Image (cartoon, rainbow, N blue to C red; front, side, top):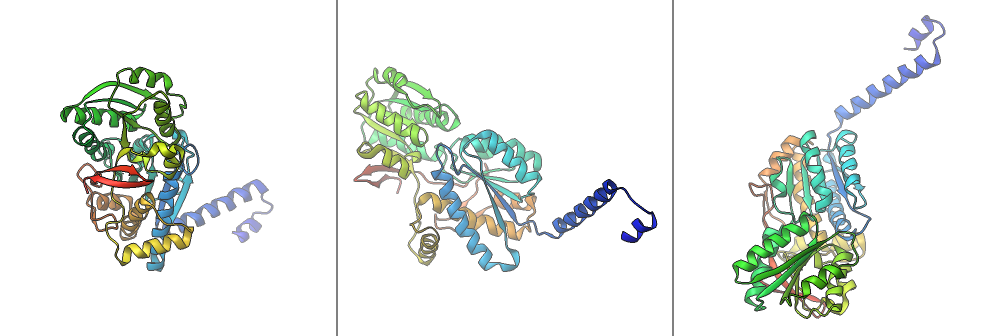
Amino acid sequence: MRRFLRSRGKVPSAIILVVMLFMNIMVLDGCQKNDKGLKVGANLSLTGSSPYWSTQIKRGLEVAADESNADNPADKLTVLYEDNQGQAKNAIAIAQKLATMDKVAVMVTAHTPMAQPQQPLVAQYKIPLLATVVSAVGFGKVNDYSFLDWPSHEELTPPVAAYAARDLKAKTAITIVVNDEYGKDGAEVFKKEFEKAGGSVLAEETFGNADKDMRAQLTKLLKTSPDVMYTVAREDALVAVVKQARELGFKGYVVGVNAFDSPNVWKGLGELGEGIVFGGVTGHAGSGPDAAAFDAAYEKKFSEKPDWVSLYGYTIGKYLFPIVIQAKGDPDKIREALSMLKAPSLRGDLVMSKERKVLSKGIVYIRKGGQNVAVSGK
């Protein structure tokens, strides 16, 4: 190249810059072709209104990635963590970046409002999207590239509705939920199952995810004198709706799903958390050496014990990362492997359904003495 430039005499600096830029692009392109492509994108809500859930998923993934890279030094993978700040527009922009610039092999994401807008994009780019902390019904049915590993309202809410009618002897209920698919799907399933069990839903209301005052809706609802209030929301809003219901004189049962099972929610509710009934899932399926090893590795890395949410992140990484390695970063092969997933885990055996959803079993818990006590579905 230098001999060519000398033979031509003086060459304008702009032309030299263009030639050098072209050469750099060629070098980078060559590096990408030699790269095994073992990159996983993690589009999470690490800040914003409810960062707890994504933070715990990230921590579990980190422990799984550490183990994968230690066990497979010739096939090390990279997890690119991005913070969408709990904003759908940010989640969309990050998904585009991960697909086009970072060229990840698969994406992991969390939360219904952030996960659902990414679904058309992943189908367009033909990159699998594995969502968690999403309870909306039918997420995996949207397209061939959408997968869900989190209990949806189909698992969480029916046992709660049945328990309310059968064990709490409730005859009437109201529902007040956040006005997106997470809340509305829950209210729809609860109404169907509670009425099937012989109960009656007297009235229904919704509120915005950022709302702090639900007294107007609650005042209308509580005029019906219900036995049970079913509510689905996130973090601060969930705390607010329970507190305000009690302030307005509601003395019946509060029921919901695993959104309650966050240390931020229990701390915010204090004594008002006592007696709340919610649908959840099991933690460790056993107490063997694998469970002990995870607990020890997590505690060493983060100076605290793992909880059930970080366990989800860890178990997702334990089956996803080997799939990425075996597929050599090929998104289509990863999609095929996820579609046929059957894997042991600390949560028990994991099986992907035809609707591209990891099957879960709902368990009913009641909060007693600051602890979750399983009362149904064990």
